[in-house]
Image 1 (tube, helix red, strand yellow):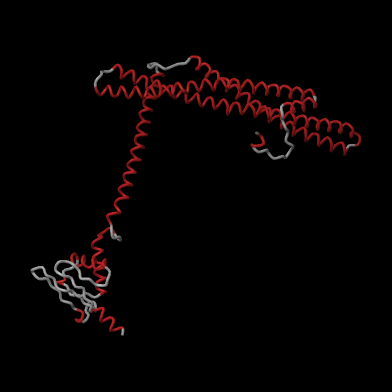
Image 2 (image 1 turned 180 degrees about the vertical axis):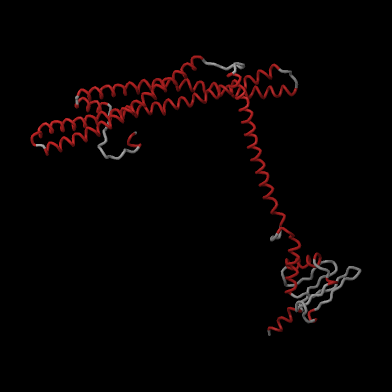
Length: 374
């Protein structure tokens, strides 16, 4: 039965007429169209023998083909296995070096769009670097001109005086902050020494019956001093923390705005000088366009300079008000705490901490979170 089926498959015929139209068979239309491509682009069947048994097989499957001069074609009988082989060979020749896929031309579109995107990004980066280079060159030229006394600079005398006063105040407050930290370290060392001395006196009072009372008095005195010293240390720590916030955050924020203002002033003077040089030059078509561009750039930097100058003036005003308010409270706290400690007035020392809402942490307690500190 199997031999009969194979025999029928081997004798299946596919008629192809001279006008190139394939006959109607119950097979797939796409398969017949691929066969037509094989007949056109494949090897010449006049010079090829199709053998069903492979190379060196018997001559039963040999199908002679030919083509007349008038263009009329003969019917061709092809085995199904050989037909699939020729279809694969035809598709390989059609695709060429592109690999698999029936439509290789579509793969070129994403690569082209990717190249365009890459060129666009590279162009944008080049423009950014170019603008930065031009701006840096102009600002450096203006800075050197000011240093050597050849160029003019815009000066706001009142604002410059306030900025210089702020820098001097910051240096002095940094010195106070450093001394306050040193005082804190010394107080902590003193407390540790007093605590150890009190423990030693208490131990000796137990082991020396003849000096038990004297050692006991001194042990109690050192413990009291330790307690008052911890209270004073808490007040000094609060004072140092407030000074640190004022110096490293509030003043530093204002000085950052001042730096931006000074950079904007330098750019403003650089483009102002460039505009003045262009205005003194000859007036032709090319120079007129450059002059308009320089005028627009100068106006943009002028607006930026005016805005930052206003910001600096406002921040300096608020900083002065905040500094007076904070330092008034901190200096009063420091004075009352130190006076009460050295006067031995424990009650006044505790009242000072309560007045400024300072809570002492017990020894070994964990540091509160930033939310609790707020």
